[in-house]
Image (cartoon, rainbow, N blue to C red):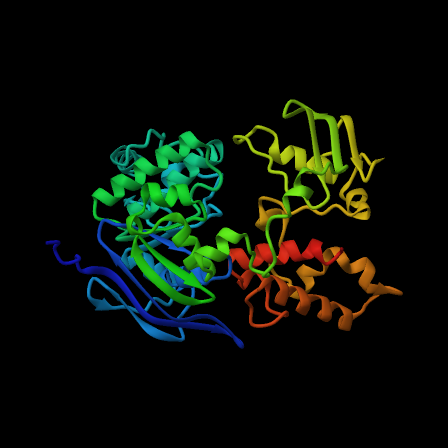
Amino acid sequence: MTGAAPPALLRMEGITKTFGSARALDGVDLTLRRGEVHALVGENGAGKSTLVKIMTGAYHRDSGEMWLDGERVDFDTPAQAQAAGVCAVHQEIHLLTHRTVAENVYLGREPRRWGFVDWRRMNHETGALLAGLGLDIDPRAVVGTLNTARQQMVAIARGVSLGAKVLVLDEPTSSLSPREVTILYDLVRRLKAQSTAIVYISHRFDELYAICDRVTVLRDGRLVSSHDLASLDRLDLVCLMLGKSRDALRAGTTAFGEQRHAPAASLTAPQPPLLRTEAIARGSRLRGVSLEVAAGEIVGVAGLLGSGRTETARAVFGAAPSEQGAVYLGGRRLDPQSPDDAIAAGIGFVSEDRKAEGIIPELSIRENLTLAALPMLTRFGIVSRSRQVEIVERFMRRLGITAASADQRIRELSGGNQQKVLLARWLCTE
């Protein structure tokens, strides 16, 4: 006979949030228990980011209730949520890179003595905090000198220093090597042992099944279900996320109702490469890379951090042109020396860092989506608003971009929806 489930640490019921006419969340429930790692999953645009922003005080819900430790709470700002013990570590790490680890951990809460910052105490307490989390990081080190993994750990340590009862980790391993992922797992297990409830957001199933206890699935802003993760196999979880049957997934159907796999005969037929690189090289990071991509083919480029994946893509796009070798497109030598060359030839580029190299945060979805298509939308220096709107509406429908309207600022969208806009930016150029 199993015992009753432990009482909830944080409970959200009937959470609804709209942006204009778009309903981002529709009556979503979520329950977190002490000392559990709870996976929050769903496709891009499912509502994960919106739910987390309501939980952490960045957004205010339209309706619904939230309780923390049995008391009803309303967070109007992230500072209020942090004071109550609800913190988030976002995929884009928000630290002051020119300040020390200790300064970042205690930012805005620096211990003082006689009106001045007590540096000795702050460094000592930060060192003790890091040691307690099993982290060998010098509290006096400047954050900008640390690698991404260590910066991630510092961000988590800051949350712990705030007395976090609930800690949200949003895609925490997106820039980590396998060894660094193992270090993160160890840290998560330490926090779990200290009764911290952890919300773990990731699209990587290996991670979910390695570290998470329970899972809540969202789809199109609605709660699908919550389960003990051990009770679901991976195909069942995919079915819940996509709203498709096991048979449909086994048959290879996509979200557009088309067959994912081509007939076997076409798979074996030789296809001439549409894109080919021949021993391209640049500096010490890119040395003699050759690859071929046929029309209609998806080629994965894998490797650890620093292996040259990004450099290969940037060379093909002309953002960091190759110094040796050649790039061919459609059988003709291209060798793009700038993004203009690549774009004119029909090559697009979606950067791994959408904040720094993708979106223009203060512009609208419409302006961001059609940025690469402006030459074909412009006549005598004037952009055709009607053609622009038609393109944007078509791709918002096609990719399922959830937003109040095409004129909503892109920075207000979830990360998944921002990524869809960046993909549509290139698809609309055909």
